[in-house]
Image (tube, rainbow, N blue to C red; front, side, top):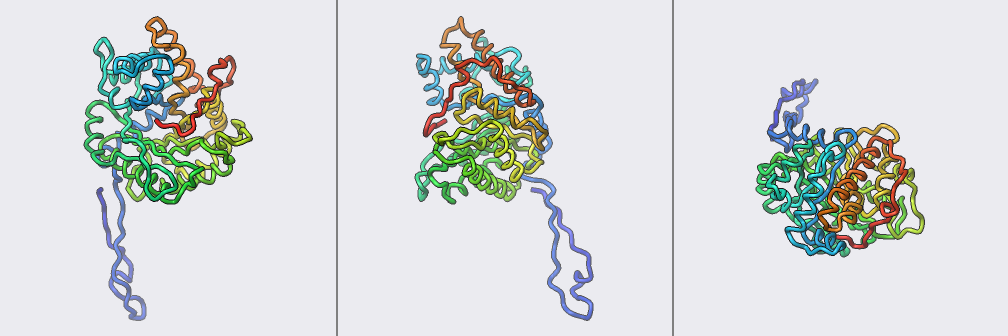
Length: 387
């Protein structure tokens, strides 16, 4: 980190104050010229702006092999590399996807895979002006000393992994940790989540990757929307405190927050307008306008719910690009249309474009919800969901 120091010029700098009194030792002003981003600063800012471009958002297909296996099992397919590759090829070779999608988060296996014709998936994305991204955390494990909470592992060896992912074509990264409201959350869990995200963000930037900062506040619980707002403000306050301590370049990050909603088991469902009001209140209180993009996770909402809520947040100008980074809320209809059959690939790709276009319209504040299928309205919440 480059730093410039300069002596303060004042009468006190000579050691004396008027009347002959001695002053304190000379102070030195420190000006921070560069953050953890180092030589990649300009590229990081450019990448973040590209991902946070009008009418576009992120397709998240970074499920672990185990989680992807559960998705495949739901349509009767075995969890094999061939089947995982076939499904991801369907997604990443969809013609016209780049009109609505600006970035795709990949699992490590996918980053190094190619189509059956030998074209790298990374190149398929680049040809449509879609930035390739990469999941870099190593998953959740129990947090000792907490109230049955978790912490996210993966800092060991992260710098070398990020450097290799950059060489392979990735330009942004994702690290997901979680906070559970029914479990407290404890001060320990919030601090661990925030510090881990900050260290990851600094390391990613130092290796040329724009970090997506994702402290997911789980939907699990019967708490009110006001309680979610309280916890979200606490979590994001600590996250930005530690991001600043780690000299992270705010213009070169993206956020992936949960929307502020009631717990999934709360007796009263919130309207899109109420969710937008509480979510934007939290963001305005906690997120600096220097951050270029807010890319919401869907967190088990139905496809239509996630889109309606995003649309409600874009009914007036925001200091940041407010968009989406959806996994299930973009893929659910696609998977059920495909059913693992080659003859259904074209129809499944059309289903992906329908969902991508709907969320593009929501990012622009122009989504109406007309003509949505009953399937797209079904909730996808799973208690204790693991990614």
